[in-house]
Amino acid sequence: MQTRARPPIVALGTLLAVGLLCAACAQRPATDAASQGPLAATSHPAAGSAADPQGHNHAPALAHTHAHGHAPGNAPGYAHAHARTHAHTHAHGHAHSHARSDAPGYAPGNVHGNVRANAHRHAHGGHSHEASDGHHHHDHLHVYVDYSDGDDARPAATPPPDASGLRWWKGNLHTHTMWSDGDHYPEVVVDWYKRHGYHFVALSDHNVLSRGEKWINPATHPLARRSGGLAGLELYRQRFGDDWVQTRTAADGQLEVRLKPLSEFRTLFEEPGRFLMIQAEEITDHLTVHVIASNLLELIPPQRGGSVSSTIERNLADVHAQREATGQIMVPHLAHPNFQWAITAEDMAVVEKLRFFEVYNGHRGVRNFGDQTHVGLDRLWDIVLTKRLGELGLGVVYGLAVDDAHHYEGSNSQVARPGRGWVMVHARFLTPEHLLHALESGDFYATSGVTLRHIERSNDRLAVEIEPDEGVQYTIEFIGTRRGYDPQGTPVVDADGNPIRTTMRYTDKIGQVLATVSGTSASYTLQGDELYVRARITSSRRKANPFAEGEFEMAWVQPLVPGAAQ
Image (cartoon, rainbow, N blue to C red; front, side):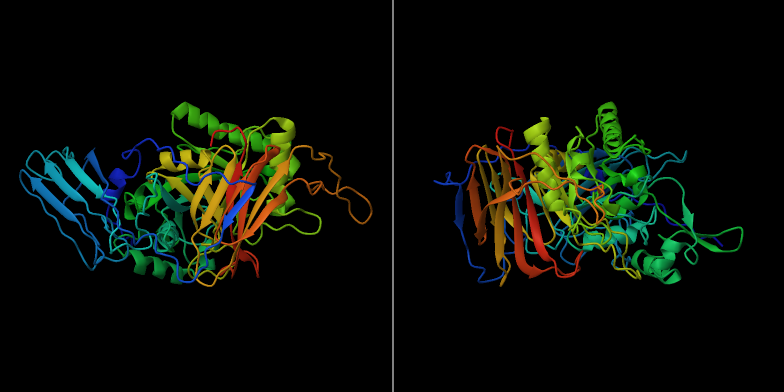
């Protein structure tokens, strides 16, 4: 017997999520005066807990949106106790508005945090839902979104703005669900991120977009079984309710569950200034080349080049071609170079369109830290930067931290859990356009646990300030390559003297530590011969839920390139 889900109802957040809150990013003002030498540092003891960045009180910034579309007045809602929501529905005929406090989980129409949405809805033509001919009438929805921070802020509340009016948004750009090889339903996956304080998440399943019709048998499907099979289905039901979970009886008499497409389940989660979902794809090609394409409109099949470098280049080119053809911003990045030791620094350095790669990936099978014959990703990054900027005349490459999560609640595996790596993006609004433009400008940092309060980038100075945690010490390293280094590499060989296909060995002058500070604030002033300078922060706190046992929480600040626009 088939149980049909109630049709999804578009939440207020969805009507505001993309492209409606546009504003030009303000130029960030200069802060401290340039230091007298290459290194200036101040250390602030972490005597107490870090101030809650969501607890500050700022003047409200109201965004006014005029949206058209069908917005039923009786959408089921689930409001947290402190949410401040004001909705007024006026219909020329019949209109209903109900808010159910017993709705399970994130029911359609949820309101969370301190969104103060004043919705003034006019339904024309005698009914607020549809006319006798079955067609929806044209509604007008006026929504005011309060971007201020109040005492009812929660982990996913809008972060406070800095002096420039920009905010730090937390997000993950590499995530899997049962649409490919993740082991839980997409709603359960997204729910984890929203409940853990993320502002955005990109669903990047292998060679598929979350769209179309897909059914699975929860008792026999290998991914469903990994998260408990029927027990995982029960968790899904408990979290989202029988009305939402859609099942049927297949021809063989077995129970099947429908995987919801992104266009349907995103309505459960998205909120303006609070949470955003981004459609992505992990383009999974031969030679173990994987490219994540964020904010795609259409699926991109693997492009298969004749070498590792050409395969990367062809896939990046296809993402850029779709971007140019559609006018929608899309950002591709290279995933986990050390997975199966597939990609070397030399492979990456020559790829003209390469702008982003994963310097940290939370999947325990991707070998972030290298081994005796393979460099770690930190070292690989410096070699790539040096060769591109110092030898090949190519652009900078930025480093991302991601989860690459596959295993969720109830899973029998710890290999690829969520919450291990993420990016903090400095942008005015929580929209794909603002986030991705900030990424392309290098206005973000990657982290596995360290939080930064401020980053300053000018033509000749890089400064960082940490948001300290009580009892934790921090080491800030400024890393770069000076001109005049020896570019010659030495092949790595095995015990028999045969070359190994891996990144070659280079002088320590490539990616050397230019300065080190113990403390919570430091700056580096370029001396004029640096190709680039980047910052790496390591804390004294061991990481919970680690990629590798014993690792410490870290953060990576993007390279400063002299003469490049900052």
